[in-house]
Image 1 (cartoon, rainbow, N blue to C red):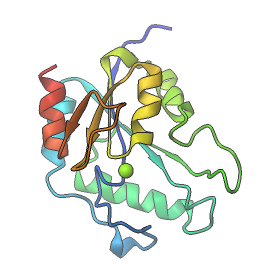
Image 2 (tube, rainbow, N blue to C red):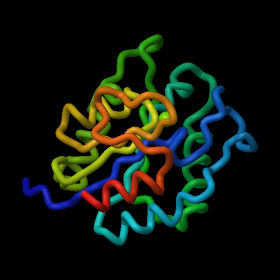
Image 3 (cartoon, rainbow, N blue to C red):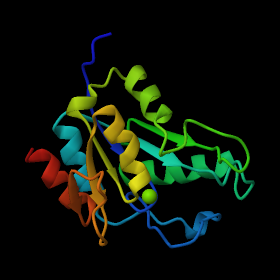
Image 4 (cartoon, rainbow, N blue to C red):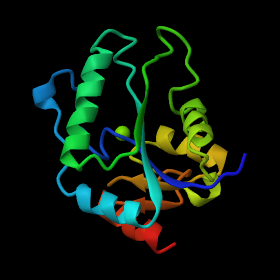
Length: 172
Ligand SMILES: [Mg+2]
């Protein structure tokens, strides 16, 4: 299979919506971050697919439903003008059942890579947790750690927000 596309893989919580420090289970608590549309547009214009990779183990644990996750994804898409190409979520949790989809495992990425014919070597993962970066590193995807704390050893770059992540990637 020819790998023809390049992709920006995006973690969701803390990258596209506010990380509030607790598990959001109500629509009114879900807040899309300010200032994410322009950076995403620039990445799209540079030819990248935009695909979200998010762990949502609250589904397996019964904290919220799959419908709630889909509602949040619709909210993000509305905020950014429908620019995201796809949103993958891993509903599992090891306390309920083992899932290779859940980051820091890499099956969710591998599925997207196969479906969208993605060249991992030309692609990037932007995430705020080390477990976002581990599967990317394993697959040869570049890693950008969005954090105000110390950079992970799995990070190629450390940035403070999505706009800075975009500048770093477009300058590479
Ligand atoms: Mg996150």
